[in-house]
Length: 416
Image 1: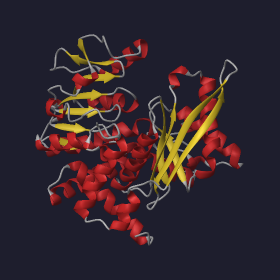
Image 2: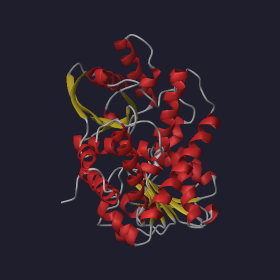
Image 3: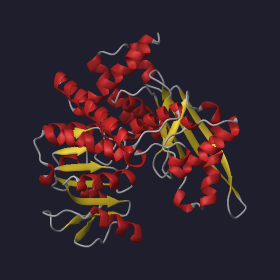
Image 4: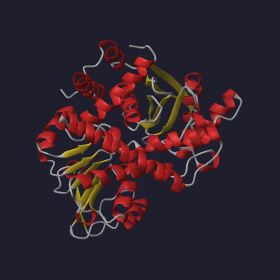
Protein backbone atom coordinates (compact mmCIF):
# COMPACT_ATOMS: atom_id res chain seq x y z
CA UNK A 1 0.00 0.00 0.00
CA UNK A 2 1.48 3.40 -0.98
CA UNK A 3 2.41 5.88 1.73
CA UNK A 4 0.17 8.87 2.41
CA UNK A 5 1.40 12.40 1.62
CA UNK A 6 2.21 13.01 5.29
CA UNK A 7 4.11 9.72 5.57
CA UNK A 8 6.11 10.78 2.50
CA UNK A 9 6.85 14.11 4.17
CA UNK A 10 8.03 12.37 7.35
CA UNK A 11 10.29 10.05 5.29
CA UNK A 12 11.94 13.20 3.91
CA UNK A 13 12.34 14.61 7.42
CA UNK A 14 13.85 11.31 8.61
CA UNK A 15 16.55 11.38 5.92
CA UNK A 16 17.56 14.96 6.74
CA UNK A 17 17.48 14.29 10.50
CA UNK A 18 19.90 11.35 10.12
CA UNK A 19 22.37 13.36 8.05
CA UNK A 20 22.25 16.25 10.55
CA UNK A 21 22.25 13.98 13.60
CA UNK A 22 19.33 16.16 14.67
CA UNK A 23 18.68 16.78 18.36
CA UNK A 24 15.98 14.32 19.49
CA UNK A 25 13.93 17.08 21.19
CA UNK A 26 13.72 19.08 17.96
CA UNK A 27 13.10 15.98 15.86
CA UNK A 28 10.16 14.97 18.08
CA UNK A 29 8.55 18.41 17.72
CA UNK A 30 9.02 18.51 13.94
CA UNK A 31 7.14 15.22 13.51
CA UNK A 32 3.77 16.84 14.23
CA UNK A 33 2.02 20.17 13.65
CA UNK A 34 1.52 22.66 16.46
CA UNK A 35 -2.20 23.05 15.71
CA UNK A 36 -4.85 21.42 13.51
CA UNK A 37 -8.25 23.02 12.96
CA UNK A 38 -11.16 21.06 11.48
CA UNK A 39 -14.26 23.18 10.88
CA UNK A 40 -17.79 22.74 9.55
CA UNK A 41 -18.93 25.52 7.21
CA UNK A 42 -22.70 25.79 6.64
CA UNK A 43 -23.50 27.49 3.32
CA UNK A 44 -26.95 28.55 2.10
CA UNK A 45 -27.04 27.29 -1.48
CA UNK A 46 -28.82 29.03 -4.34
CA UNK A 47 -31.70 26.53 -4.10
CA UNK A 48 -32.39 27.61 -0.52
CA UNK A 49 -30.97 24.45 1.09
CA UNK A 50 -28.03 24.56 3.50
CA UNK A 51 -25.01 22.40 2.73
CA UNK A 52 -22.20 21.81 5.24
CA UNK A 53 -18.60 21.74 3.95
CA UNK A 54 -15.54 20.51 5.88
CA UNK A 55 -12.54 22.83 6.07
CA UNK A 56 -9.03 22.50 7.52
CA UNK A 57 -6.23 24.77 8.66
CA UNK A 58 -2.99 23.16 9.83
CA UNK A 59 -0.35 25.31 11.52
CA UNK A 60 2.85 23.31 11.47
CA UNK A 61 5.79 25.30 12.83
CA UNK A 62 6.33 29.00 13.52
CA UNK A 63 9.85 29.08 14.96
CA UNK A 64 11.07 31.25 12.05
CA UNK A 65 7.99 33.48 11.80
CA UNK A 66 4.19 33.49 11.39
CA UNK A 67 2.59 30.41 9.81
CA UNK A 68 2.28 30.84 6.03
CA UNK A 69 0.45 28.77 3.45
CA UNK A 70 -2.27 28.60 0.85
CA UNK A 71 -5.89 27.50 0.95
CA UNK A 72 -6.97 24.90 -1.62
CA UNK A 73 -10.51 24.11 -2.73
CA UNK A 74 -10.54 20.53 -4.02
CA UNK A 75 -12.81 17.52 -3.80
CA UNK A 76 -9.91 15.28 -2.71
CA UNK A 77 -8.66 17.47 0.16
CA UNK A 78 -7.85 15.39 3.26
CA UNK A 79 -6.49 16.23 6.68
CA UNK A 80 -3.42 14.10 5.93
CA UNK A 81 -2.72 16.04 2.72
CA UNK A 82 -3.11 19.44 4.42
CA UNK A 83 -0.73 18.32 7.20
CA UNK A 84 1.88 17.29 4.62
CA UNK A 85 1.50 20.56 2.72
CA UNK A 86 1.87 22.55 5.96
CA UNK A 87 5.11 20.70 6.75
CA UNK A 88 6.40 21.32 3.22
CA UNK A 89 5.54 25.02 3.57
CA UNK A 90 7.66 25.17 6.74
CA UNK A 91 10.55 23.65 4.81
CA UNK A 92 9.94 25.80 1.71
CA UNK A 93 10.08 29.12 3.59
CA UNK A 94 13.21 27.92 5.35
CA UNK A 95 14.89 26.75 2.11
CA UNK A 96 14.63 30.21 0.57
CA UNK A 97 15.49 31.92 3.86
CA UNK A 98 12.35 34.00 4.37
CA UNK A 99 11.21 34.71 7.97
CA UNK A 100 8.01 32.67 7.93
CA UNK A 101 6.80 29.33 9.27
CA UNK A 102 4.49 26.85 7.57
CA UNK A 103 0.75 26.27 7.44
CA UNK A 104 -1.90 25.17 4.97
CA UNK A 105 -5.66 25.22 4.54
CA UNK A 106 -8.22 23.38 2.48
CA UNK A 107 -11.92 22.81 1.93
CA UNK A 108 -13.45 19.61 0.55
CA UNK A 109 -15.39 21.02 -2.41
CA UNK A 110 -15.53 21.01 -6.17
CA UNK A 111 -15.56 24.78 -6.79
CA UNK A 112 -16.57 24.22 -10.43
CA UNK A 113 -19.96 23.00 -9.17
CA UNK A 114 -20.66 26.20 -7.19
CA UNK A 115 -22.11 29.47 -8.42
CA UNK A 116 -20.13 32.67 -7.79
CA UNK A 117 -22.47 33.52 -4.91
CA UNK A 118 -22.07 30.08 -3.31
CA UNK A 119 -18.29 30.29 -3.66
CA UNK A 120 -18.26 33.69 -1.97
CA UNK A 121 -20.47 32.51 0.91
CA UNK A 122 -18.25 29.44 1.38
CA UNK A 123 -15.08 31.57 1.46
CA UNK A 124 -16.53 34.05 3.94
CA UNK A 125 -17.87 31.17 6.07
CA UNK A 126 -14.43 29.54 6.20
CA UNK A 127 -12.69 32.63 7.56
CA UNK A 128 -15.46 33.19 10.12
CA UNK A 129 -14.63 29.74 11.50
CA UNK A 130 -10.86 30.29 11.82
CA UNK A 131 -10.39 34.08 12.20
CA UNK A 132 -9.23 33.85 15.86
CA UNK A 133 -6.21 31.81 14.80
CA UNK A 134 -5.01 33.83 11.78
CA UNK A 135 -3.66 37.33 11.17
CA UNK A 136 -0.60 39.24 9.88
CA UNK A 137 1.51 38.25 12.89
CA UNK A 138 -0.05 34.83 13.43
CA UNK A 139 -0.94 32.94 10.24
CA UNK A 140 -1.05 34.37 6.71
CA UNK A 141 -3.09 32.45 4.09
CA UNK A 142 -2.72 32.67 0.29
CA UNK A 143 -4.18 31.09 -2.89
CA UNK A 144 -3.55 27.46 -3.81
CA UNK A 145 -5.30 24.90 -6.03
CA UNK A 146 -8.60 26.33 -7.38
CA UNK A 147 -8.44 29.49 -5.29
CA UNK A 148 -7.97 32.92 -6.86
CA UNK A 149 -7.18 36.58 -6.06
CA UNK A 150 -10.95 37.22 -6.00
CA UNK A 151 -11.42 34.56 -3.31
CA UNK A 152 -8.55 36.13 -1.32
CA UNK A 153 -10.38 39.48 -1.65
CA UNK A 154 -13.59 38.04 -0.19
CA UNK A 155 -11.69 36.41 2.67
CA UNK A 156 -9.81 39.64 3.43
CA UNK A 157 -13.04 41.66 3.40
CA UNK A 158 -14.78 39.26 5.79
CA UNK A 159 -11.76 39.17 8.13
CA UNK A 160 -11.54 42.98 8.25
CA UNK A 161 -15.28 43.24 8.96
CA UNK A 162 -14.85 40.87 11.92
CA UNK A 163 -11.80 42.63 13.43
CA UNK A 164 -13.06 46.13 12.60
CA UNK A 165 -10.02 47.59 10.84
CA UNK A 166 -7.84 47.21 7.74
CA UNK A 167 -5.25 44.40 7.85
CA UNK A 168 -4.13 43.79 4.24
CA UNK A 169 -1.06 41.82 5.38
CA UNK A 170 -3.33 39.11 6.79
CA UNK A 171 -3.60 37.41 3.39
CA UNK A 172 -1.51 37.40 0.20
CA UNK A 173 -2.25 36.78 -3.45
CA UNK A 174 -4.86 39.57 -3.31
CA UNK A 175 -5.97 41.73 -6.24
CA UNK A 176 -3.65 44.72 -6.80
CA UNK A 177 -6.47 47.15 -5.93
CA UNK A 178 -6.54 45.97 -2.29
CA UNK A 179 -2.86 45.51 -1.54
CA UNK A 180 -1.68 42.73 -3.81
CA UNK A 181 1.86 42.64 -5.16
CA UNK A 182 2.91 43.17 -8.76
CA UNK A 183 4.17 39.86 -10.16
CA UNK A 184 2.34 37.64 -7.65
CA UNK A 185 0.06 36.07 -10.28
CA UNK A 186 2.95 34.32 -12.05
CA UNK A 187 5.51 34.29 -9.21
CA UNK A 188 5.48 30.51 -8.67
CA UNK A 189 6.26 29.91 -12.34
CA UNK A 190 8.83 32.71 -12.54
CA UNK A 191 10.65 31.39 -9.48
CA UNK A 192 10.64 27.94 -11.08
CA UNK A 193 12.16 29.40 -14.25
CA UNK A 194 14.97 31.09 -12.28
CA UNK A 195 15.76 27.79 -10.53
CA UNK A 196 15.53 25.71 -13.71
CA UNK A 197 17.87 28.12 -15.50
CA UNK A 198 20.51 27.42 -12.83
CA UNK A 199 19.97 23.65 -13.15
CA UNK A 200 20.27 23.85 -16.96
CA UNK A 201 23.61 25.69 -16.56
CA UNK A 202 24.92 22.95 -14.24
CA UNK A 203 24.25 20.35 -16.97
CA UNK A 204 25.70 22.58 -19.72
CA UNK A 205 22.44 22.60 -21.69
CA UNK A 206 21.45 25.49 -23.94
CA UNK A 207 17.83 26.75 -23.76
CA UNK A 208 17.26 26.62 -27.52
CA UNK A 209 18.28 22.94 -27.57
CA UNK A 210 16.31 22.04 -24.42
CA UNK A 211 12.96 20.23 -24.79
CA UNK A 212 10.39 20.56 -22.01
CA UNK A 213 7.23 18.67 -21.01
CA UNK A 214 4.84 20.26 -18.49
CA UNK A 215 2.34 18.07 -16.65
CA UNK A 216 -0.40 20.39 -15.40
CA UNK A 217 -1.53 23.46 -17.34
CA UNK A 218 -3.09 25.45 -14.50
CA UNK A 219 -1.79 28.81 -13.29
CA UNK A 220 1.74 27.67 -12.42
CA UNK A 221 2.24 25.19 -15.29
CA UNK A 222 0.83 27.41 -18.06
CA UNK A 223 2.81 30.45 -16.88
CA UNK A 224 6.02 28.42 -16.72
CA UNK A 225 5.42 27.01 -20.21
CA UNK A 226 4.84 30.53 -21.54
CA UNK A 227 7.91 32.04 -19.84
CA UNK A 228 10.18 29.15 -20.93
CA UNK A 229 8.88 29.36 -24.49
CA UNK A 230 9.66 33.09 -24.51
CA UNK A 231 13.23 32.33 -23.40
CA UNK A 232 13.75 29.97 -26.35
CA UNK A 233 13.11 26.61 -24.67
CA UNK A 234 11.15 24.10 -26.78
CA UNK A 235 7.98 23.24 -24.88
CA UNK A 236 6.95 20.06 -26.73
CA UNK A 237 4.24 18.61 -24.46
CA UNK A 238 1.71 19.80 -21.90
CA UNK A 239 -1.27 18.29 -20.11
CA UNK A 240 -4.27 19.33 -18.04
CA UNK A 241 -6.83 17.42 -15.97
CA UNK A 242 -8.46 16.01 -19.13
CA UNK A 243 -5.29 14.73 -20.84
CA UNK A 244 -2.20 15.88 -22.69
CA UNK A 245 -0.67 16.69 -26.06
CA UNK A 246 2.75 16.27 -27.64
CA UNK A 247 3.92 18.09 -30.77
CA UNK A 248 4.42 16.05 -33.93
CA UNK A 249 7.48 18.15 -34.86
CA UNK A 250 9.92 18.22 -31.92
CA UNK A 251 12.14 20.75 -33.74
CA UNK A 252 9.57 23.51 -33.37
CA UNK A 253 7.79 23.20 -30.02
CA UNK A 254 4.33 24.47 -29.09
CA UNK A 255 3.07 27.98 -29.72
CA UNK A 256 2.14 28.43 -26.05
CA UNK A 257 0.32 31.74 -26.53
CA UNK A 258 -1.96 30.16 -29.16
CA UNK A 259 -2.43 27.12 -26.93
CA UNK A 260 -3.56 29.32 -24.02
CA UNK A 261 -6.22 30.87 -26.27
CA UNK A 262 -7.25 27.42 -27.50
CA UNK A 263 -7.66 26.13 -23.94
CA UNK A 264 -9.72 29.21 -23.02
CA UNK A 265 -12.10 28.45 -25.89
CA UNK A 266 -12.30 24.64 -25.58
CA UNK A 267 -11.61 23.98 -21.88
CA UNK A 268 -8.70 21.64 -22.58
CA UNK A 269 -5.35 21.44 -24.39
CA UNK A 270 -6.38 18.23 -26.15
CA UNK A 271 -6.87 18.35 -29.91
CA UNK A 272 -4.58 21.37 -30.45
CA UNK A 273 -3.30 21.68 -34.03
CA UNK A 274 -0.03 19.92 -34.88
CA UNK A 275 -0.17 17.65 -31.82
CA UNK A 276 -1.10 14.12 -30.79
CA UNK A 277 -3.17 13.39 -27.69
CA UNK A 278 -1.45 11.55 -24.83
CA UNK A 279 -2.37 10.74 -21.23
CA UNK A 280 -1.14 12.40 -18.05
CA UNK A 281 0.81 9.21 -17.34
CA UNK A 282 2.49 9.18 -20.76
CA UNK A 283 3.71 12.77 -20.49
CA UNK A 284 5.92 11.76 -17.55
CA UNK A 285 7.71 9.19 -19.71
CA UNK A 286 8.49 11.31 -22.78
CA UNK A 287 12.05 11.57 -24.08
CA UNK A 288 12.65 15.23 -23.17
CA UNK A 289 15.45 17.15 -21.46
CA UNK A 290 13.23 18.71 -18.78
CA UNK A 291 10.09 17.37 -17.11
CA UNK A 292 8.01 19.82 -15.07
CA UNK A 293 5.38 18.09 -12.87
CA UNK A 294 2.99 20.98 -12.16
CA UNK A 295 -0.19 19.08 -11.22
CA UNK A 296 -0.88 17.21 -7.95
CA UNK A 297 0.97 14.93 -5.51
CA UNK A 298 2.30 11.42 -6.12
CA UNK A 299 2.65 11.50 -9.92
CA UNK A 300 6.13 9.95 -10.17
CA UNK A 301 6.07 6.73 -8.18
CA UNK A 302 7.93 3.44 -7.91
CA UNK A 303 5.65 2.19 -10.72
CA UNK A 304 6.85 4.68 -13.36
CA UNK A 305 10.12 6.24 -12.13
CA UNK A 306 12.24 3.81 -14.20
CA UNK A 307 10.45 5.08 -17.33
CA UNK A 308 11.28 8.77 -16.73
CA UNK A 309 13.77 9.83 -19.43
CA UNK A 310 14.25 13.53 -18.64
CA UNK A 311 17.68 14.82 -17.56
CA UNK A 312 16.07 17.32 -15.16
CA UNK A 313 12.83 17.00 -13.18
CA UNK A 314 11.77 20.44 -11.89
CA UNK A 315 8.92 20.01 -9.40
CA UNK A 316 6.51 22.91 -9.75
CA UNK A 317 3.75 20.96 -7.95
CA UNK A 318 3.86 20.07 -4.25
CA UNK A 319 4.99 16.50 -3.57
CA UNK A 320 4.75 15.06 -7.11
CA UNK A 321 7.47 12.45 -6.47
CA UNK A 322 7.33 9.72 -3.82
CA UNK A 323 10.43 8.96 -1.67
CA UNK A 324 10.90 5.56 -3.36
CA UNK A 325 10.77 7.20 -6.80
CA UNK A 326 13.30 9.80 -5.61
CA UNK A 327 15.87 7.07 -5.04
CA UNK A 328 15.25 5.54 -8.46
CA UNK A 329 15.67 8.91 -10.23
CA UNK A 330 18.86 9.63 -8.26
CA UNK A 331 20.37 6.24 -9.24
CA UNK A 332 19.46 6.94 -12.88
CA UNK A 333 21.48 10.18 -12.72
CA UNK A 334 18.43 12.43 -13.16
CA UNK A 335 18.78 15.84 -11.52
CA UNK A 336 15.58 16.37 -9.53
CA UNK A 337 15.10 19.96 -8.34
CA UNK A 338 12.63 19.62 -5.44
CA UNK A 339 9.32 21.36 -4.91
CA UNK A 340 10.42 23.19 -1.76
CA UNK A 341 12.94 25.03 -3.93
CA UNK A 342 11.41 25.04 -7.44
CA UNK A 343 7.97 26.34 -6.48
CA UNK A 344 9.05 28.69 -3.67
CA UNK A 345 8.65 31.75 -5.91
CA UNK A 346 5.00 32.08 -4.91
CA UNK A 347 5.60 32.23 -1.18
CA UNK A 348 8.63 34.48 -1.69
CA UNK A 349 6.54 37.08 -3.51
CA UNK A 350 3.82 36.58 -0.87
CA UNK A 351 6.48 37.58 1.67
CA UNK A 352 7.23 40.66 -0.46
CA UNK A 353 3.49 41.40 -0.49
CA UNK A 354 3.37 41.28 3.32
CA UNK A 355 6.36 43.62 3.53
CA UNK A 356 4.68 46.06 1.13
CA UNK A 357 1.43 45.90 3.12
CA UNK A 358 3.31 46.63 6.37
CA UNK A 359 5.09 49.63 4.83
CA UNK A 360 2.04 50.75 2.83
CA UNK A 361 4.57 51.28 0.02
CA UNK A 362 4.38 49.26 -3.18
CA UNK A 363 7.09 48.03 -5.54
CA UNK A 364 7.14 47.85 -9.33
CA UNK A 365 7.06 44.46 -11.05
CA UNK A 366 10.70 45.04 -12.06
CA UNK A 367 11.68 45.48 -8.38
CA UNK A 368 9.73 42.35 -7.38
CA UNK A 369 11.34 40.19 -10.08
CA UNK A 370 14.87 41.45 -9.35
CA UNK A 371 14.52 40.55 -5.67
CA UNK A 372 12.89 37.21 -6.51
CA UNK A 373 15.67 36.30 -8.97
CA UNK A 374 18.37 36.92 -6.37
CA UNK A 375 16.63 34.85 -3.67
CA UNK A 376 15.91 31.91 -6.04
CA UNK A 377 19.44 31.84 -7.49
CA UNK A 378 21.10 32.15 -4.07
CA UNK A 379 18.83 29.40 -2.69
CA UNK A 380 19.64 27.07 -5.60
CA UNK A 381 23.36 27.62 -5.01
CA UNK A 382 23.00 26.96 -1.25
CA UNK A 383 21.14 23.70 -1.91
CA UNK A 384 23.68 22.69 -4.58
CA UNK A 385 26.58 23.25 -2.14
CA UNK A 386 24.79 21.12 0.46
CA UNK A 387 24.25 18.40 -2.18
CA UNK A 388 27.97 18.37 -3.02
CA UNK A 389 29.05 18.53 0.65
CA UNK A 390 27.07 15.43 1.68
CA UNK A 391 27.02 13.71 -1.76
CA UNK A 392 23.22 13.51 -1.64
CA UNK A 393 20.31 14.25 -3.98
CA UNK A 394 18.93 17.80 -4.30
CA UNK A 395 15.74 17.10 -2.33
CA UNK A 396 17.61 15.71 0.66
CA UNK A 397 20.03 18.65 0.41
CA UNK A 398 17.13 21.13 0.47
CA UNK A 399 15.64 19.40 3.50
CA UNK A 400 19.00 19.31 5.29
CA UNK A 401 19.40 23.05 4.72
CA UNK A 402 15.79 23.82 5.72
CA UNK A 403 15.66 21.57 8.79
CA UNK A 404 18.93 23.00 10.10
CA UNK A 405 17.58 26.56 9.77
CA UNK A 406 14.33 25.69 11.56
CA UNK A 407 16.27 23.76 14.23
CA UNK A 408 18.53 26.79 14.82
CA UNK A 409 15.49 29.02 15.35
CA UNK A 410 14.04 26.46 17.77
CA UNK A 411 17.35 26.25 19.67
CA UNK A 412 17.58 30.03 19.88
CA UNK A 413 14.05 30.13 21.32
CA UNK A 414 14.96 27.48 23.91
CA UNK A 415 12.63 24.91 22.37
CA UNK A 416 15.27 22.15 22.22
